[in-house]
Image (cartoon, rainbow, N blue to C red; front, side, top):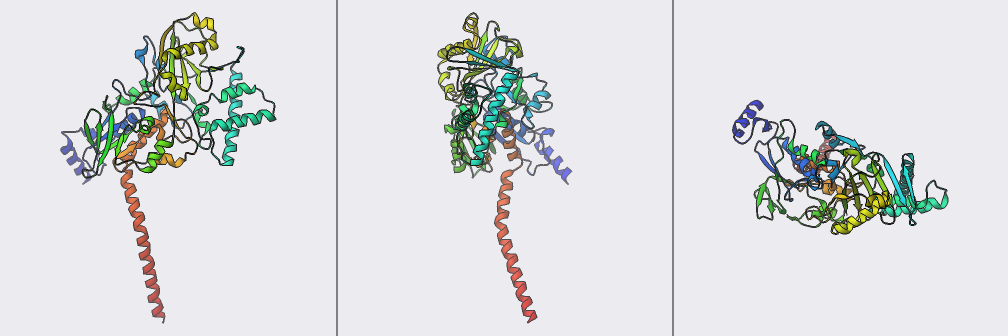
Length: 513
């Protein structure tokens, strides 16, 4: 009988889908339309997973006019003769310590060249201009001391059970430690390292929810750029269909039409798309800014979670010179000075070691990222000043800057931020609320729906897309509804059993009498 049904379905659907697209295991053979809103890696992961089911028509709506990818952007148009790693102005590192990191496995399957981030060199510039340089074991030992102090501070917070910003907890621990013991490193150097950490520069990062171990392992780089990995996901492999993407589709309204049992997606170009379900994979900044109107409004718990979690900023600066004049074998340069402090241009990746091209890539974390994105001329001046502190003013001045690019994640209207993170007072339940669908029509993906204990991650974003797709595929809404019905039905059945037992006991008593 099952075989007969499958042949019947194939015959009825042959004009609209191929034999491979028919899912004989499904309870319903009617082709469903699913729209993914947001073309970042979370949205692409969701689309790719949905397409594997075969009986779904899937398309992705992306607001950007010329590209997809969200905060993945390998900007090859920014310079000639470059490799992807030279111009990755978005996400660029994969975490090797993360359990079952699907993206690393994919990079291997797609035969993309990867490399480690390499060794570290630290430059500490004092106010009088004197410099101390740490590299090799000395650099490793310095960071080891810092992380020991941070772990000790976090343990004390967990014992107290009172949430406070990570930066406050770490600096208190630093003051206490240096009052009681002799230390291997100068207090000012240790403080400079502490205040450069992403969790320190992000406002109000929760010390109770932070897990320092999640911030280790960011040392795998895709040499052709992270965009190359995303392109492979979009294109598919083997017999997989490519993801259908529509650019320049700015979604402004998502409405549930209960009468038709459909969801309506409306764009600013006055078009409306009717679908059976939608996966919302928009950046957290866009949702916090309320750029999309939901009808009916989002549940109170979800709205509160979206507004209360932390939103951080990060700007990448790509500087290409006529020639590499810095130590070519160093992977990362860290600089601590009066100017390069609290996340401002303190970390520089040496692209030359990876590609052979004379490029350095710097980072600006925290609210200053938003400020300097709108002042490129002044930013360039400060970049030269920081690099002069690193390598010497005369050396920097002797070489011409051929390429100067910076990202605009904080001011891009379709991104409006860089990272999500847990703020003081947040609870794990907030992330549960973020993952819950609005049954059975709207599902949610994005790194901010996965991250509870640290700054969001690329693999977290990818996993969130897969999870949202599987929520739809596995009919979690239907199962949830059936479970609620069962829970409501159970007390009535229990009451009937008790009544029957009492009745039976009463009859027995009469017989005995």
